[in-house]
Image (tube, rainbow, N blue to C red):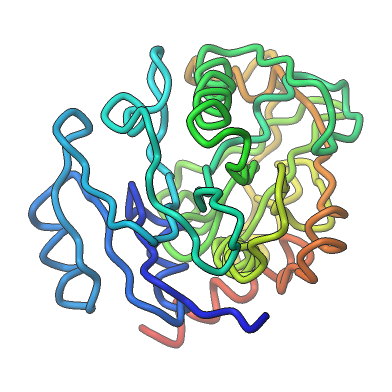
Length: 289
């Protein structure tokens, strides 16, 4: 069956979703939290409307629904105002609603450097991750299990990379032996979501990430090299001046597998490692300077 794009409605037109909107072949609508952001997106051809997370939320029937709004301790705000999801994907034909929920690989907790797969047990260690698990379960209940869940690691891209911190002189190289993080370029999130939307029969959980989990200090060093700067000195984790949130990230270590997305969606990250990704981010910034 040939894929026919319908309206893509995004609850939370933020960083990742706006990159998807640029490549979505159909119309895009969704929510933002400020009138200024709504006006900017409307100027770009996106039907954006302000929603504060508490009032009514009308999602047109037949739309693909992408939910990116982070949960709170009670779960997903969209669920609270739409306990029954009524939109349908006409290309599926089985009556299931077409909902994609963006979650986090933080739901797996600490794996001691081991690999996280989509079928791995969720063992959230932080309040943030526990709220994500709750929201995932809420969407499963609201869609009779039809929701497609995409779990993401750390996101980087234009405007969100080590370059900003290096230029500002605030970058650090915190070293914790054995610590690695998985990450994903925002363009690879967009291409992965597009592949998923084009394959309505692909169900379950998917990871979108690059091919090389890496120590964070190596990423900062490479970014500094690209800028022609000396990398900041290494600081032991025990001695680092980190915020509670930043310290909580170092409490967990895992490698995230993207094998299922490659096999089921035919998706492959354009930026296989942070090296290709950061090189592209800098080239784009310099090209637009």
